[in-house]
Image (cartoon, rainbow, N blue to C red; front, side):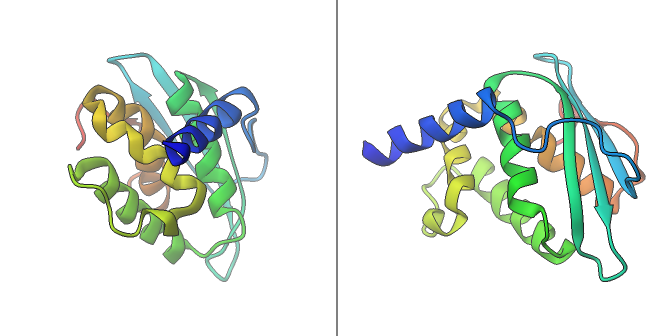
Length: 152
């Protein structure tokens, strides 16, 4: 129960005071995300250097507490990290969001583990995963809008 309370505090904190919020000038990659089911929308901005490291990352937009907190946690976790780490976290969180069992290594995700609670509320998974799908699209997609109503 204490861990659940800590995770809820992390979500509330990142919603109230989102990290890396605002447009980023000079970005090299960006993507938009939109969830028409609940109205969450965001734009993710990324600056990647010549060594494939995420030098800067930010977001702007609006949405529910889980959507905003997830985007904030994403930016906080990936600033200064290589693209390979972003890909690894995307895969891990996709597994956390979609697997009905408690992940064995949830604590290795650190603060990102706070997002695991959405599994109990299937309609909220799209809120938590919106920024992560936008990230994946910005890094590897065609840079078009991400619409979570049509993605897994």
